Length: 535
Image (cartoon, rainbow, N blue to C red):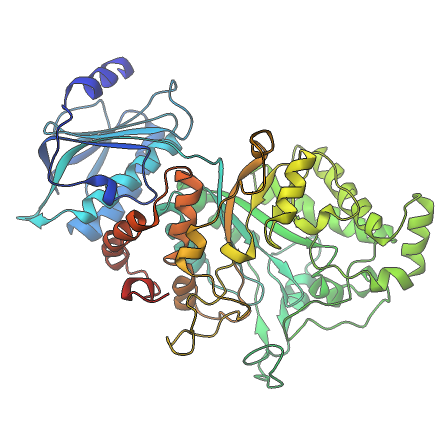
């Protein structure tokens, strides 16, 4: 059957110029796209035929999405390929994320190197359908042949649910946005100074104490002294976490949990004060920033707590990566803590920087023994790291460059390009932007301009696994605001991750005006600035 399908791909259409140029439709930009002769009418009578049972769910998700465009959901069946249908199949000779999409007069074929690749092909078909004209209950799709695969293995987006928490349905909606843009990694930030957001059955008090703060600062953190006097918080139960992970898996997105250590731990310390250097008392933070109170690296009880927490985390998250933070951990308490100073002496460490390396490498070894790998923010470089740690470079790209030169794998997510809680225009007040991080603007063009390989030679470039946008929620309390910050900038990141070496901002801008139609049909609440010619 696979050989027959490949023959069909080779002979059904010829390459001639057609009126619709699909290179100006799909985001991220495909590797190659050739117009064919003729057209196919996609209607409510069109059947999605999945060659294998494990492709049926991908077809059903596509049919659900297409209903917003077509007005009616298609029928999805497990059956052999036929003309007049949308046919889905896997060909293991293709790369795992590579797909071929062919629209012909006879039907539509999507062949992928894996089920995930077929799902990507369906996202491209959805964009083509949304860009087509609906007439007499059908969508007329011009013939086209697309051959496509991503440049980077890792294409991610982070969602902080600690500063503000969101519902399970809203997290799923976030995942829907990622899936449309062929993002394949969802980094879920779950613990912080301002709230612990994951149920740990071994430590039920985390859900009762650490998950709640007494009030929340109003307005800009450094300037405001006003609070809302309202208790705030919540936690995702383990059943809810499983629900989100399963939902993401159906969309071929791997979920990476972040459990912060040794810093950003005040919510945990408030719950269990003995885990800190001073023994407390502590209070879940009500404002933003960096606390000097971090996990004590000298007490064995700290590592017992972390290992017990991670034991349950591993049961909930099957993907290989666990993010263990490592950022913004002031050493002040460690310098004065007799337990930490004894640890430095007993382990033959030079200073508190090497103590953090000891901390992170000890946790990493524990995770490695259980078949998992760590990601940490670029601060883990200070004091030295193991060769197996993956570095997420956020303080610009310099940390990622340094890590790649050491031979460590890197995910580039510099705040200069990828922090999408930052304002989107150069004049946020004049342009009516809602409250955001005001350090500097990260425009759509700026995000698009990211070069993950900058500063690296060809040999060093092999250590760049991919790219990611980060969405922190200090100033973002509603999901409409989340979407406003995410869209359309996540599309720019997606194109860098997928189409690196084949980017053109002007062409991207034209395609975004077409993709906007699909945003509207799916009811996404996107930022209007780029579409209105404002940067």
